[in-house]
Image 1 (cartoon, rainbow, N blue to C red):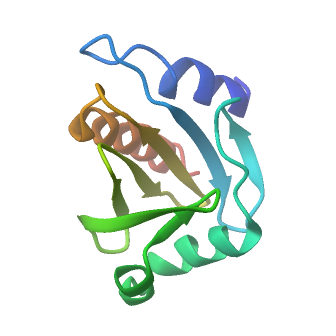
Image 2 (cartoon, rainbow, N blue to C red):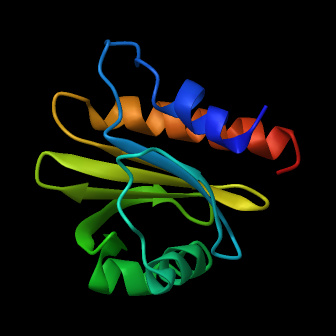
Length: 132
């Protein structure tokens, strides 16, 4: 299975409510984009560096916010070292760190934050189990 099919078939699929994520990607901890949906924003290298580093020290994100494609998200509760969650208006984002990558999901209404969190975190847990 290609990395693109993980995004297309497992992240951009209909969620339990029938809603969808707005965009999704899998980004390597080295900054390389493994796969992304066509709707995923163009993320700058410095944005990737910032959120990858934030898994070890989230103080900079708490202070300055999470940026994805130039859009600022206010960081809300997550799991230190594992999950970063951001809110922007009625939408938001969830990032789950694996051994080698970060799984990213972006959502907007009517998709609920919990729907995004579940799909992104399950994919991240699966990749961790597969040693990625």
